[in-house]
Length: 553
Image (spheres, rainbow, N blue to C red):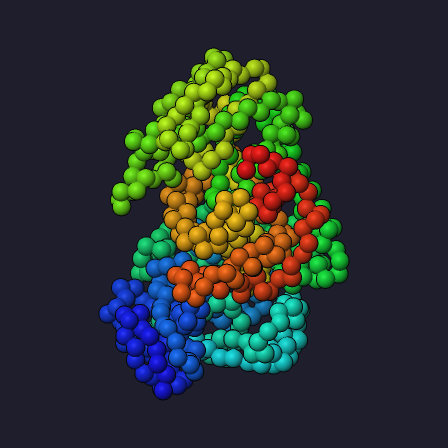
């Protein structure tokens, strides 16, 4: 018999081989949302995995980031099975999320009509109504290699060869269709009632419920510019044969790491120079450049590099820090729990900021404030600004695209730039690396290097950071005039070197241990690479150190 400590604190005995799915059914009243994944001794575990030792049990519900990933992963598996059954000639690649939806590209040019999608939809719903099981299984490493050879899935075969460790792999079966996925699955298809299939660009959108309600499907809102930014880098990385972890591993093992660094950095420089050219080509109409993006997107370094390229074009960038316009502490808005809400746009003195922008663009001399974070008060230390003929204000911050920040400035006098790190890197055709995971790895490394925060603190704060992004950053991304992708195709291998030892320090009794273990598992697929060849002006240097712009960090 096994002794399991349950989430309610009760210790109970169970027969060896029992699954967490069976245990979870005893706790239906303990959770308000459906349980979709287990946690055993701090590690995320499929609900169907048999238990063979004593341990501490917990569960992940649908209404969490990890829980929604289980839903989307399972829905994708059901969709892939429907495609393989009804239209086996279609070749799919899972690409990126667009809001609460997943985009899958059809890579061999086949076009599916609305009638094709209707048939696929009906097929999926029949399996949902039948509560078709999604069967958890394990196979030997040798058997997995044999299957991959038969399927001619070279990338997956190489990825398996670069992943040492366990001699068995977890796979899932839906009827006669078997696949490998990075992460747990739903026990059966009945969980997947809400979805929608939509023709979009060269592929298909799978729309799924957002984080608010498992039983409600919001209307899909396309973001053509954001999707275009992602696909531009995805297509480019495929052309240079570096769009999967297996290919990146091969580049590293063959000694070509420095070459891929140089090519990736050259692309960034070319893109940034192009943005500066557009500012210069505005015939001096653009006097204000606003740069926004989510956490760890590289706003600071991007702003510095753009400023250098603006100088090349004969302009003089004048940096203005939005932080200096924070309201005095006693006027700062508060969260429902009473703590200060520094992420809110209303934490900024919008009236003063707009007044200064208006006066500066009118040619007036303005005394600039400096915010004292220790006292919580704005101070004036003698800095004055008066714009010359070729001067351009450059402002970066999470609220920069919010129109309330710059409503005093006419649209033709400002350029809004949205940046994010949308990674084109995938484990394989069906297992993508989430952009949020890459940004989290960046933040873990940066916080350790420059902010005296260990990985434990960064992980504990991450959900609050994400909530702030959802509220204050993402709603304004489509208002941008220009989008720039700060992702670098090689960075996953560099971040491994820094993030892995930090994540290994997190102990099993910590609430974020499960997430730390998932990130470690993700990092285990990539080979580490040396970072000596990364230039000192690289956006990645903002996170790993050695930046020429270190005084601005």
